[in-house]
Amino acid sequence: MIKHAFLSAALLSATLSAHAVTMTGMSLQGNALAGFYSPDGELSLDLNLVNQRPATLVFTVEATDPAELKFDAVLANLSGFNWSLVTLTLDKGVSFGSDGTVQTTFAPGSVLSRAGGTAQITLAQPGEGYGLEIGDVFGNAGTTDWTLQLNGLKVGQQFSLTVSAVPEPESVALMLAGLGVIGAVRARRRV
Image (cartoon, rainbow, N blue to C red; front, side, top):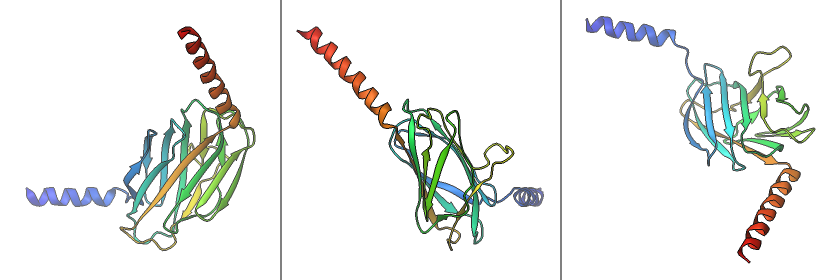
């Protein structure tokens, strides 16, 4: 009986795909991770950004000496501000390999600039209030995944990905003006 249990467990583990990386830590600072998926050779995540503070995710390499990972992500804008710039930063020598696609939800157009472990997505038409699809998230025609070059990281070693979004200046100015009006109304009521 015990022999059958061990055999079943061994067969089950052999049929499950290995994970390329596992998430071993995070500093979301009020943001929310909606999903994480990492079958062999891939890293995919859904991140809800609800403020302007950066979210950092820490990963541990699980696959044997991977050279690169396919990468895609959905970044949802739940902050109430329109974005003008989104920055993705990798550490520990991990870098962005090939560029994939970037799609905005409603305000089309973006400009991608990349250098080593930093990728900046500048919205061609600031005003994106909903989010970004990075890579081939939904398998749509004409979209391609990004790649992450692990540059010699071995099993058990860690790297992190930090995501930050900068609101467009007009959006922040409008919010500050609104707060100023509210403050003036409250001050006037006190008099």
